[in-house]
Image (tube, rainbow, N blue to C red; front, side, top):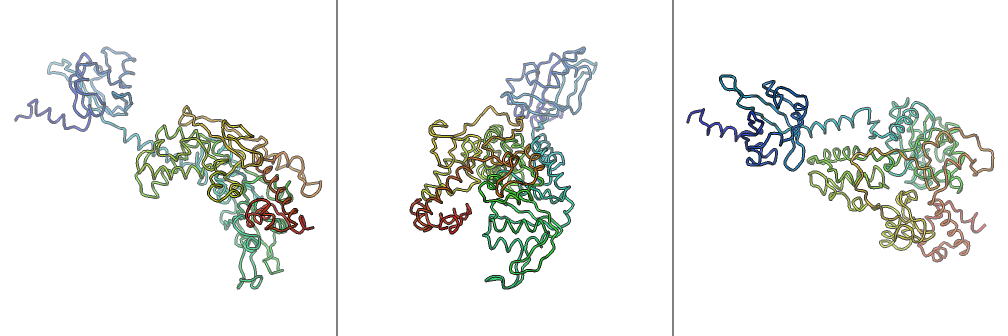
Length: 567
């Protein structure tokens, strides 16, 4: 068979991986190959005989608008090499392509038509998008010491953290659970003048009073049972660096007194020792509690609050920076797939709409958990809405309000709902039930754990919305807003009675629904203890709870049995 045999040429054309189309001088398609059919979704019969404009190439549209001697500028230039453009498939989707085109002529210069080779660039464009997204995440414009965010709220937070790092004054990090306070504390250390010194952290809520004091200040041999040797505390370990005290709102009152003395004298004494030791430590503290309300309740020392609240920084809730959700979700997906060795998948627009519409009571930590779940369910492919956790699709926070209380009560008894962690039952959730009948069917009773109504999914939310930053400073806001920082940083010294904050402090830390609820619970506990004449078992029976629950609440609310009940 001769090489110029049409059947021979047709066989070569049909085996090409790139799409090929031959257009006559009149602009009508004369021939296409199977690769072009696969690329466009049109069959050969649907294309042959039709004008080439059926592919809606954006480059051809621009050329026709520019004008020329022919209906297409290609016939003026006689050829085009490596032009990136897009064509539209039969189903309406747009495909990025690379086009090579040339006009074919006969021996006398007559135009026979034009042949175009079209290469699908979908995979290449997707890789370029992923590389660009990764570069943004790792770049200095949107990444800050391991913290991801491009919203104005996060940029403002980054500036505050950077300025706080330049100082040697104590830093107080405020924010709901899961907003990244640990990352912020690490950023302050790594950007500060003490970055070459040690960075030591301690969770103040993880230990009881005796162990906590030993962890902070150390102990000497024989100080207590089990102290078989001298032990260095966290303050000594952090000498010359930074000490991060997480959950400082849960610090017991006796330990608060000793911590205040250390901050004032720069000296510590190990447990069981009277030999002072010099320490040079900058304190970085964090809490999700309302410290002002704790001061009013007598559970946090006001003078200690003034000592640690020199440079307050509030980490914004994820719901206040929704434009960061697609960026964070992509970051977590990449980290999870790289860690597990999975095939990297992407997020569909439907999945992103659900992520952006959800309220995120657990903030960034909850978003990461949702991405972990989605990666497992999707099995390595693209993540669609059906792969997200059910509570995100339904729009109902899984760990908030009435639903959580009911679940805990069902599993562990009627009292467990009241013992739900404060971080999970948040009074500042975007949708609340204020009283009986509120919330369209989800009712709450006075004194009950804050009930949360179902939150509908708003499907009209765009994939990457431009959401203005909203700083909640209303009466139910549990943490100090960023705008309140200036008021707190310039507070004068206290002049009233101990335990009574000045007006500026009360303004900066308004009471919340949770503090009001806890206050009522403390009053009920005291009433039961007094009625039982200090008998804990009898008080537990009166309250309908376990004896251990009464002891836990006494410790939580700082109730001294001898002073407040028997005295």
